Image (cartoon, rainbow, N blue to C red; front, side):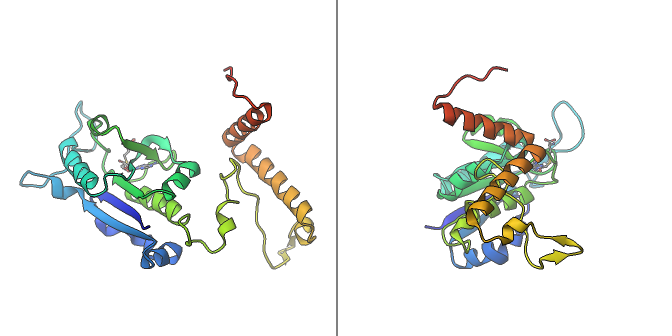
Length: 246
Ligand code: SAH
């Protein structure tokens, strides 16, 4: 089965862009995934083919029009009725690896890319199935780089795309933790050496060191992830879900 990506954008030339290269590019050639773009401007009806207008209530910038977006979304839904549909926006829920894994196991994704100040909010009322997702607490100039990132994250998980099957499951976030740090030859570089335990050949010891570093780094760098990880661990240890007090 081919993972089908459909991108609604004002810049279809941006796709597949960097996904033409490397792992994703090879997988595209092998038809493990496919990409189709929909030009939002094709759904404008006035003589200037306008897709945006000034914000109600005033203020800077322009807003993507609900009527134009609605027609573009209808078109995408008629092509891919069973594929989850996303809008890229900093107002969305942060995209998580768990969701990426679910998507990679499904038929594909349809992604709506914003520009300017973003979307007329009514599009999300009219199409509650549109999932609003964010790439993080940053502001991009458009949804396209975010869509490329979401696609990249899905494509690497498609069957047969990554070389070693394990490299998908030991990554950061898969266990709710950051991955442990990596080292490779040369053994000594600028006076710095590789941790001895990694050269010991003792697999149990190496696994213990990696687990400890993974936990330590998550606790120090991502207290948010660490708290969640501890919560999940405590819950599964007690065997029951209990209400968390604030
Ligand atoms: N005015 C908006 C930002 C618009 S940026 C706000 O402050 O919330 C223009 C477009 O870039 C957005 O519509 C969205 O599609 C995309 N974009 C910007 N930042 C993003 C992010 N962190 N995640 C996903 N998409 C983003």
